[in-house]
Image 1 (cartoon, helix red, strand yellow):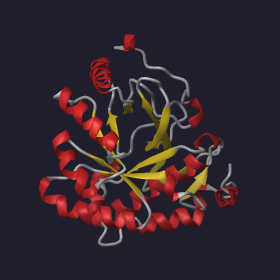
Image 2 (tube, rainbow, N blue to C red; image 1 turned 180 degrees about the vertical axis):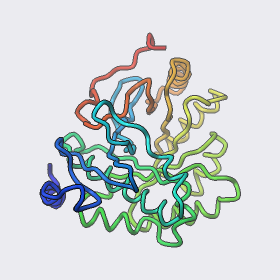
Image 3 (spheres, rainbow, N blue to C red; image 1 turned 180 degrees about the horizontal axis):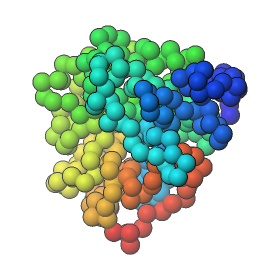
Length: 278
């Protein structure tokens, strides 16, 4: 680990019990957190180039603690949080846990971490989005430049809010990815917001020629286009056709490629997704 402040923080946590803090370590060294009666930790799903299998980043995901498997997704807890303050608290706890659990691992070196921002937080935080998380990263000695915050898909009448939030996060030093529902929506945002990445659903591509044109445009604008939820051979075949049309590498994530894993070392660095998978 090359983050001495984080190392010292983890050493202090190792002497604390669950009863004494809201964040503690388990026997494997994972940071755990508590929200009401739920104990949670982090899992990480790789983002890869589909032609080469090259690993380009990880996305942090909140999971319940389970000895038998990787645990269950806890993101829907935010949908049911009783108040805006509680939703903000849970979102910040998740991002803190993910940052700790990611950067404590040697395999995190030189790899980006993508973290979700729940749609409820866009309106729940009144001002200066990202400032609290930026202070947490500074306190732990962690590199903000290695983190990409993923903003949710918004409705057309929330455009002004997205502009405001993007400006706030950038002022606090964060790079941004924006989830979009279509190439048309992303095209409208490209010049206005120019994020570091767009994320599009691989299971709902539609016009492959339009997708190919947008892949080329994003490449020229130095914007990463990521296809999420790559879960079926049919979706993979569609992306492979787009790759053939553009001649450009395409980045995707999904259960067809990788299960979310606690240990980054379990993500195979040399996986090649072959056409025969489709």
